[in-house]
Image (tube, rainbow, N blue to C red; front, top):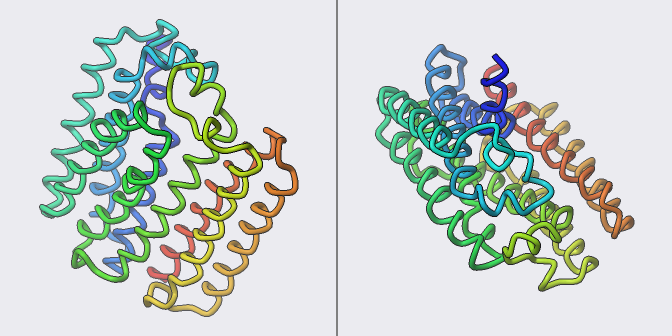
Length: 285
C-alpha cells in the first residue's frame, strides 16, 4: 500500500479531477439533462489528465529535481522509478483514449488527442524556450469543456461552448502567471525562462490583475450566449465575480506578499469551480 501512495501525486489528482469536472460541465451544457453517459466522458478525461500529468513529470524529472517546489515529487525524490512512471502514464493515456473513443463522439476523441499533444509536446517544449509559453498553451485548459460538449451531442464549434472555452482559456493564463509570482525564483534555479526576469514584481502583479479582470468580464458575458436561464443564477454569477475582483484588488494592495499570491491562486481555483457549478446546476434544474 505504501508503494502505491506516490502514484496519486504523480497523476496530480486535484488537477485531473478539475479537468474531469470541466468536461462534465461541458457535457451538461450540451445535454441539458444529467444522464449516466456523463460518467464515461468524465472518466475518460480524468484518465487522460492523470496520464498526461504523469508523463509530464517523467519528461521534467531533471528540472523538477532542481526546484524547491517540485524536488519532492515522486520521481526526483526516488519514490517512483522513471521507467515505472513512463509505463504507468502510457497505460492511463491509452485507457483514457479508449473510453473517449467509445463515447461515440469522434470530435471528443480528437480533442483529447490535441490536449495531450499540446501539453506533453508543445507546452513542455515551449516552457524551456520562452516565459510566454502559457499564453498560446493555455488553450489546454479550454479543451476539457469542449470534450464534454462534443460528447454530450453539442455541435462543435458553437458560440455557446466557445464562450465557455474562452473563459477557461483566460482563467488558465491567470493560473499560470500566479505561479510565476509565487515561484519565479524556482524557475530561474532550474534554468527555465521566468516572467520575473522580464517584469518587476509590481509590473507582474498589475498584469495578473488585468488577466483577472479579463476573466471576470468573460464570465459576466456568458449569459448573453444563452448559457444561463435563471435570473437567480445570473445574480450569483455576478456576486462570485465581484468576489474575484475583490481578491484581485487585494493582490495589488499587497504586492510583495507571497502568501497573498498563493491566497489569490487558491481563490482563482475556487472561483472557476463556483462558475462551473452555477452553469451546470442552472442547466439541469
